[in-house]
View 1: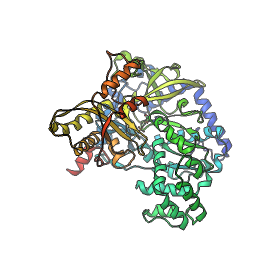
View 2: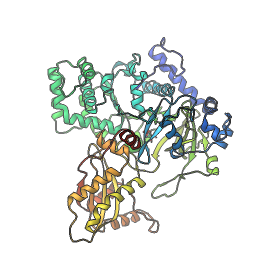
View 3: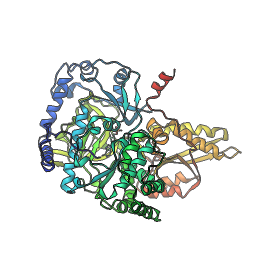
View 4: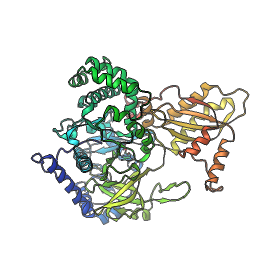
Length: 617
Ligand code: AMP
């Protein structure tokens, strides 16, 4: 993630300092906050509670203005989104009274986590932008310790905004990054060598994703020799940019050859900003053409952007599935995961950014929020399934530990209390303590709870998958065909990646099931998946059409035999609803008799379905 300081972490103006002094000051801040995490956490909690002492939510639970950690932990429940939903709905519908926060809710951040098929709405307050900027401001001083000289060139980052919606009460609802890029913190950032990007703001802020990508790629190519680092937020997004180049390089080369911009780019402000950079350059156009026409695209990044030192993308969590593809395109450049953040709260940074992706740890910055940790237990050694109770009894609520008290090697679910009005809120991420920076723990990101399939920011769990399969198989009824078993797989060998379902059927009817019916099944599944999935398919084009692969009968028995040969217990064996292990995927693929793809994109509109229904009724 790119970005640099607007103000220093100490919140004093640091404009009089030179770059090296600013970097030193930032590193000093990290030293300081990691040296006394407990003291800071106590202060942060007390500040959040004293500011919000009289909000309805805290009064309802009887906190009555108390700000100490002990009372807070004793009285306040540990909650999930669904517990908060009635309050969130009131705010969305226009209730402006101080329900969660004494500061007015400035907007909702739409999370990629969903509830009831719709994006979760995270309340936020104006001031949180400062906190997010602060976390961004830590990234480059940390990076500079390992890769000096990054101030001497540019970053080529593919950054995008997404469509936003309005709640019935008139609050804007949009993803956190859209909110950030549209804020003055980003748009009017003062010149800083670390925010010197190849993409002009206008290209990032263009809501047409084709024009945005085209113009960002064109500027990146024009400025190719100046680029020292490349990236996007998530690995999937960066790979999509490479794919875009694969498809569109002849047009981009033509623009560079002639110094004129493709007429498909119609947004006037985008055109103007690109034309400031684009100059006729036959030599560069020929060079790009030669490289892009080569049969192999291995190392294309280092060929086209020869001074690139690293690829800045998140490859932890489900994004790790993209590491081989990125290694291929970048010829093994370092893959750098700089930060860990969410719509609820920005959490922490990677203090050792050149480490291997499998060793990435995030140091939670104790000033961002008040953090607690719910111990997680692995309940099965073979499947490694994670056991976190859905709702917590009183004893379990007391088991939450503080940032300074987590134990090395132990896994925890992250729970946050934020300035914006989330109190003991379960984020749903599982982290493992991998070490310490001074007294502050550093965490490996283990997984998002329950997620079985993910391609981009979609996060499909077993229940959602089961429901989609259930809706799809109704199409088979007229053919007297039934689904015996199924599993799924996230296929990232295609760009964009897509969901694959392996289905084993029992067909009793006389008429064979026509291909169009299986296509209907694919489409029915897509229509049943949540709003983030459907947006990825229909709007962002970050997910490819869902595929159903029919496997020969007896395949799932073979799968069970194989799992048992690996040590699974016969008595406890359950068909996994998602497979990742390559030999298992191969076992299934070898038995495929036919394959079908979803013929069209599922429906998606910005905002929650209920809001759209209100508007159209
Ligand atoms: P959202 O609420 O849509 O912004 O998504 C936030 C979620 O994305 C987090 O709770 C994590 O599950 C995931 N995420 C964010 N940063 C990282 C990271 N560096 N590594 C792995 N997963 C991440």
